[in-house]
Length: 148
Image 1: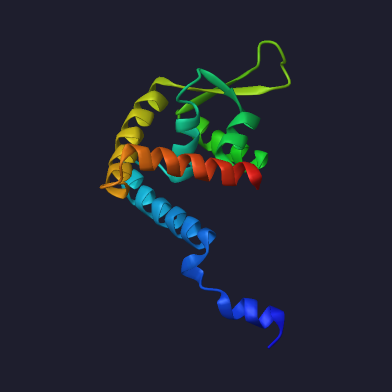
Image 2: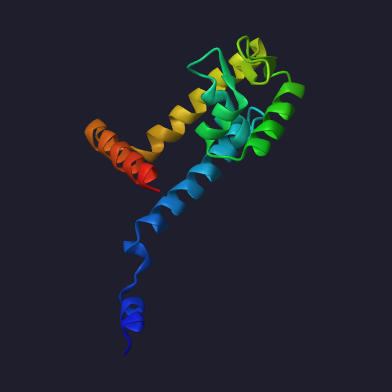
């Protein structure tokens, strides 16, 4: 048996962390899609709304970075959200080449509804998990992300 064949024989997907990361992400998106559909929102728009949670205006490139999506994808999502009246755009006051995005009153209301839904999904997913365990998981995943 070659060394590669031996390594293949030792592979068990349930022991591969990325197997679980992908499964959890997929299940999370399924749960969020279903729950957000009740308020007429999709997951990409939810992610943009939550990126705008902490700051009044955020650049399109910062949104793309926070959502881990391509800039042109972020631009299309934001254009759709602008048509839906959820966000407004403006040039950055100090660098007019940069487009910033902010929530409208309708977007703020939608964000509050979406956050309530997300908290319910979080509570279901982490039932029985302590705050310390959750913080540790966040720390571990942040480290994996940074190393990738």
